Length: 199
Image (tube, rainbow, N blue to C red; front, side):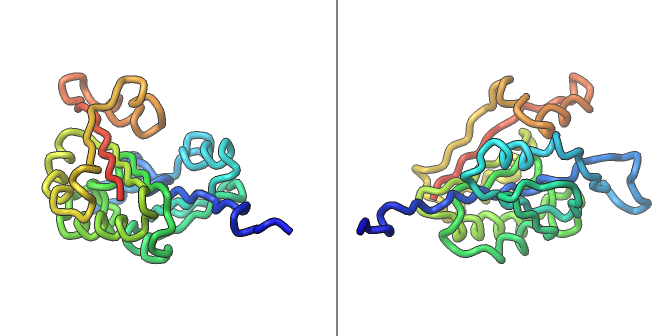
């Protein structure tokens, strides 16, 4: 009889942070900086990837409630990033991905940089990743400047940290990256960077 422990492969787990909502100032409530509206399913990265990669389990974490159809390999948590990650086992996640969310949002869903929150988030992400797992963050120049010192002081090994300028093709990959700069005047637009931190 074959040894099943050697033939059964563990399913990869990918976490998408801030995958449901987006800025929609037309529905902004009085006193809020931004109100997060729900994207159509076909524009949500998690929806696209879960349909394409059936052998991977996807977990989305977002404060916005999601009620549309989900493929079976996609679980959605209506929580902030810290509370959502805390529910996952240590050393269990292969990839944690964020596009225009880490470094931007905290518990209140407002666009404000919170140094303590982001420091806790990077340290928690490190605990949840498997050895060799990666935290990938896409963001603009101003947020990179704010996050840089936290990255330097994080648990991620110095030799396994990478920050690179994203190509135009990479910037057109998903809704977030397509629309963020499109809403700004040409002179207000920022460069996009990809932070890759490996455990």
